[in-house]
Image (cartoon, rainbow, N blue to C red; front, side, top):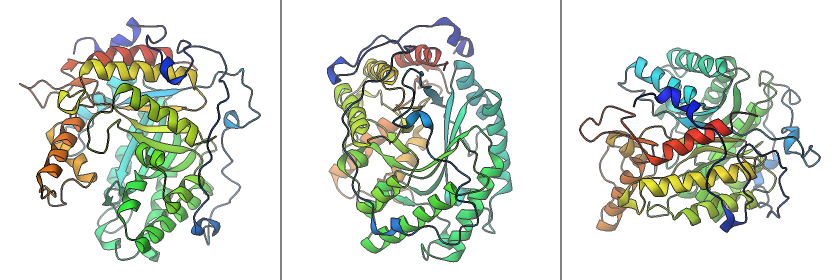
Length: 434
């Protein structure tokens, strides 16, 4: 793709589309106007385990302050709140060349990305002896330094669960309350704070934790949520936590909108911010209409009350197989960028997934995390309807990028720009400051 890293300079100004149908104002992305207060529903009461603080915390509870002053009721509304907007590169960590990964990171940075989310499974972060992996964290340290040098903000997620999957190391799955498991998560949290610096804007636990908890038995749901709550408390009270780092648990947009179970809701209430993934897909993995997808963001805004909404992954497919198109994908993002301009204080961090479409292997791996494929790689669905659901999911997951892979060269990323790419470049330029 010729001139990819220089295209940021070609476009300036506001986004084109408005979210008027949803009642959002439509200033340019650079507008300095303050937000209009909106009515918000409160979330449910916390679950029973939240009342118990993390025992034997070795860190000072006062070391990590409360939420940013800009999110508090008394904040100066004349101050323009920054929106950290980024595009996630599709980095092939298994089998891909290190130079390709670095190029992907540099591509999004040169385009103007100011946000980057990393989610790594619990079992990938530990070595064979159960300690934090030196090689993995060495790679993370290099990437963190790259984003630090560019003044970008990072979100790092320790995926204790990966949607429907238990991501704990196999040797530590016997009990959610074992001391070995607790020691392992604390060691990872310690290592994260050593590896990252002030660029670590958010530390999260899990990917779509609500999905895992909804599939668990009542006893496992309570014990798993209690473990995550202890990890959350330890990370929040850690003496080495950067003052600007916010800590939370990642939930799906669908789960929050539908209503979280008490155990999941307690984790949300214990978080500094609401960390969300939103793929704009319905329960059958068909693309939601642009209107319905934007309505979901408006619903998140009202449901989550005063918690800032951090979009760890925001995605919209372009495949015609899931009732979408490249033009429809662009329309969605144009409206999103207008929404962000009107709700700066509500959406401080947004990472668009992704720069490039996932290949077939990546799409199938993502389908596995949703429980559509058995751990051995075979289709877990026995009937035709479930098989159709898997086909829709893989079609959606392989079309989330702003650029597409050429059919004749599927292993060459960034081959063809989709219409949404230019819209994203405009938005990155508009939100580059503050």
